[in-house]
Image (tube, rainbow, N blue to C red; front, side):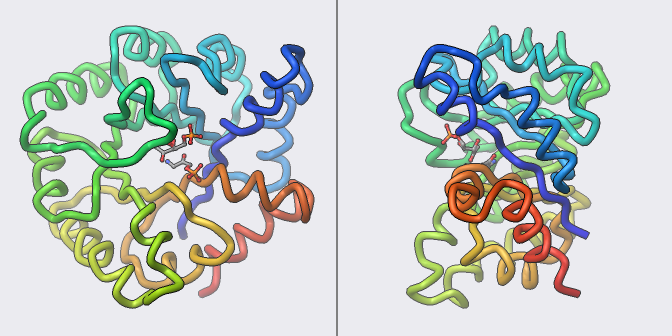
Length: 239
Ligand SMILES: CC(=O)[C@@H](O)[C@H](O)COP(=O)(O)O
Ligand SMILES: NCC(=O)COP(=O)(O)O
């Protein structure tokens, strides 16, 4: 069964807009879990535009489902993750000024760096996931550096879903099959939504977790957070 990890970055965006503490991020994370989220994902970016490093510390020991911290592994990020020791860390190659994540790692070019990071986090007992494009060579490169899982960057799937969903999902099926062949755990995320999630979950083999934030929080403006989380859960459990 594919688990739903709710990314609460955009809750922090709303909170930061007024400089106060409304909505209270910790309370929303706990409510998301109560409403059916099977994980909480945060992505503290260097400019702290939404999730602040302090938020990550505040959520530690409070989140009772899987805590997944995503980000570019600069020194500050590494130190935070080693201090918090979440269930999972997802390594993302974002430039500091990127408006959002826009590519996976080149796991061949950055093999030495990634191998060192994987070793460090696994020594701390943290599961490691590496954010990659749906490219079998990058999946093989991720395996070579010793990661536990990969997370497929699904923006290209979402962008082409309405145009031709069979064609859009094809590279992701191949990448998922490669991950299975190599014994890698499989996560996915970015721009997954109520429109495209069910089809993705239906055809991607071995999908362990999806992390979803932007579309889910937008949907919650219309359907309510509890109802929305249930709607996303239903997209995942169609068997
Ligand atoms: C790695 C990934 O796809 C998500 O963490 C996404 O980058 C969300 O980041 P923003 O909420 O800053 O767009
Ligand atoms: N790893 C993907 C994630 O956490 C959320 O991405 P999005 O749903 O906000 O695009």
